[in-house]
Image: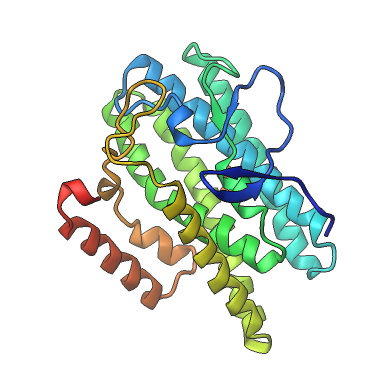
Length: 265
Ligand SMILES: [Fe+2]
Ligand SMILES: [Fe+2]
């Protein structure tokens, strides 16, 4: 694996950003983003713009893994190559929808958070643990809620698009779970890589946590997001190959979060 450039955000060392067209304003901290919390016209465009950019990152991360780890089993490289194709398609579909509702590329600031965290890792197992199992695992939960949200907001076209993306994301998580099971049988260090990667994400999340009352570029309170409303999508997580034990643990964390007073979430 070749050496790479890094950047420091709130004291955490992360991988430096991938190249971007000049139309994009790249920021490094959630406080600089213009994410809205409602479903106004501007918010709809911002949501699609952010999702489009996230799909671009997903493509870049999977492609970077192909380039960085040429010696992983060929079948796994094929899974990553197929994932690149899926993420590219997702990105284009969202870009098309964004333009249909009057948005354009570069309309909102973008952040390469997932890329910067995932691509710090020096093994394919740690990358899959973060990109596929953690971020895309979380996306399985989030997308289920978003489909309903866009439907309720009177936009069945976007809702249907997101439902299609969800089906692909389940497959991306599933192949990573399959490979973890297969490889960890003979090589338990694979699970150590997974555990240390998850700990790295936890430490980054903690370090980047906004201060109470901190707002972003459009005045939205960053600690006011209702994360607890995104419930585990148990059926699809099962399809994605998470074990019953892992699903029980996710539900336990969800209960613990719900039991916390609003101010400390
Ligand atoms: Fe995707
Ligand atoms: Fe994906």
